[in-house]
Length: 467
Image (cartoon, rainbow, N blue to C red):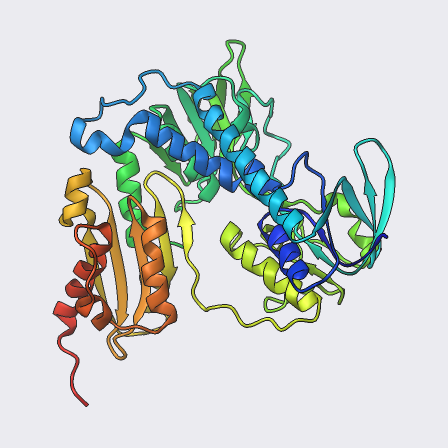
């Protein structure tokens, strides 16, 4: 009864997709989840909650309509933490219900409890009531995700000094917020709270942020944040964080500057949630951040029957790529053929404004010595952008002068994470600038920016010369 073809530890994007894929191939699958409900970090504290919080904040604040009605425009004058939480609960319940139905429909068994290795094929599961169960699997897929990094010098209290998991449980919206960490998580939450009219300050020891994004997009993003009075203290480190008697928090920076705020969010990195797995019993070892090394094509660890996928294997740590990693790992684990994934995948940052990118940045193109041309369209140039009242946002495409092929697409602004898929398809199908110039897009749409940017590049590249 306790013998399975595949045991999956964790039910986040990688775990659930891997489990369902193996089940569809007729294999006996068990999912072990230590949380109260299935879904993992993605559903309960990560991807879905932060994006739900963002959407609620933009809707209730009237953010999208302020281009027409002015900065004082509000849909709801007084927005509370409870307003944000109500929509969050509805969304999470729906996500869990869908996932439980998928498991039931595909006959995936799941058990609640904390898993740890006994040997490479056997795991002990400690349930909430203390009961211990041993299960064995021909193969094991570790999809345990990550947890916030919590250094000792930060006095976390879950109320005024929090990590990104605890932020979802706050009782009141702060009037001021300091975010330590200018990575994706920190920037997303910083801009969401800024949209709610919280005074936000971002601190990071690095002098730059989002270095994997095209520099021109980051420059535009930085301008928009500063234009709405967000403070970006880059190249500065918070050396001391202390709670004050009046309930506020004071930060001392390495340059001697002191900042007092209502709330501090520490979002400087995450750790692989591998600590409780007893990895040595399986012959595995995690790195200093709790992450596991895998073969990037098969997601096999150094132990042949154990696989790992999702955030626990590191970059790019996206829900979308984690799902595909889990599916590929499961196919390999049960002996099925796994096709090589498409070369280009999109990266989405759900900040306010959104950023999404696919393919090479202009900096990467320069490093490779590829002769190129860029085409840019600003959303305010499109009729749909004007109708929507957009005064910011742009789409940038990079083309090879030699082959005329699209090399990269980079978008900042409303709908960026949706629009990027047009560029992604053209990239993977090796399309050229002529596709955008000669294609017809719905009018009026933001997607028309592809044609405008294509024409912008084509005007400098010239006609395709006949061979």
